[in-house]
Image (cartoon, rainbow, N blue to C red; front, top):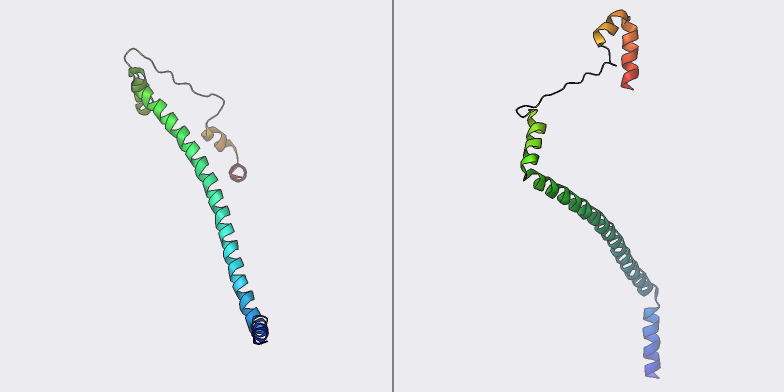
Length: 127
């Protein structure tokens, strides 16, 4: 009989309002922790994808740079790079300058147009 009463007292204490409140609060803390871990896992997965994409881009960049380095190891590559950087030509080479004739000088057009027309065109070209 005493054991039955002892079990009933344990059940009464477990099912009492304060005990249930403690269990609910404990469950909420566990749920909050689980949600936090899930959010971190999703963020980590997104970070992994971003890092993989960055790794692929860096690999492509490395291949491109290695190609450029190999090109610069040759005499032709060095000469081409010097011509690009310093705008020079080798002995016996000639430089041709091509002028686009479709654009007229702005000083001729601005002197014939009134100031408000040039102002309005300037506003429209900025948009």
